[in-house]
Length: 397
Image (cartoon, rainbow, N blue to C red; front, side, top):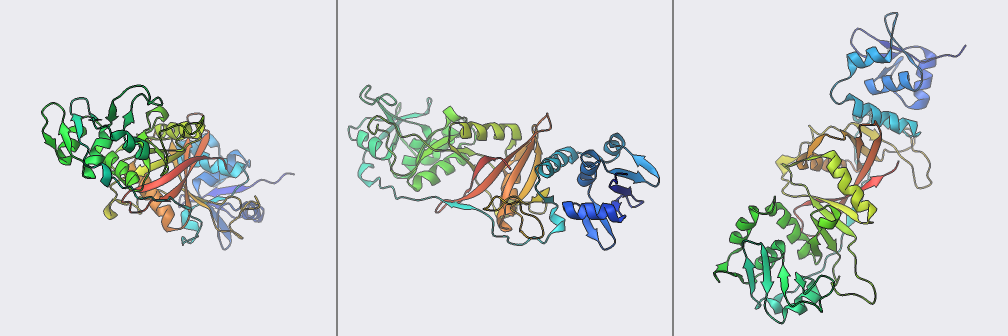
């Protein structure tokens, strides 16, 4: 006769396994918490054993089926957690809860160090910029501006990818604000009044949503020598080119950006589906998706409120499955629903917590078909930056 795992729901509302066969099956599968003579289980483990391993759940002598279990024990975040747990286990990987292991620095975090290059604009600061406050666009009318365009790719001279046609040199609002910040004189094209950086920023706040946060990000990357341009074509705020990139064709090829940046202010909420779409679009055009979370202060982090749902083990360099006995974990996991909203502060806190224990963050998003998609975050070290930056990419366990 085939033996089955037996789970007991006790008076304290907790789930236990007492018999030797059940305990041995749990031990081999790294499920549950061993407490001397019995095992204690969490809700996700119980449902997994009932659904996938055909386990029986008893309350006294009565069998509780899956329907009754869900009626009694499913709460607001249960299903996204359960579906993530089930998915990880079905893949033959090991998953546990943060309160079952000692959280320390596991030294498995990944930090990508981005290069930096000085930008010298001193030879061009005598050129005046004329700004159209109503249309949020600036102009150079100095013949030397083409040199600035070719060397540092500020603005667009002539027609995009065809500078031999057209004579205007136009600048977007971020470029105007940045060059003002760097000491260029900016004049109102209608009144010839000299404009301050404060005046430009105030004007742009009513036009570009979250302009100040976006300008901070723009400025940090430009200060490190990167070319920062519109990311509209790729569904993000900016696309960036590494220092030294040129707007001119090299032979028969144009230089293509390999990174895009999305600015996620700390107090703004975003649907996880929107985040997933932006990452997948970047992935589909072979670009690295960078999440920028500006303005985070020490008091903004919510470590005690950040829901680490699971700690998971993955595979080592030899593609061998890691387990809790012989390996350290690789990721912390937060589980989200497709239509759930999260704030920049929430995501930054989760990322910071992962950094603090030397693990990488996995974002598990459960869609309406109960499928789970994973995204992994790697911290970026950008010199002299106040902003938290992370590469986020699609991940297949």
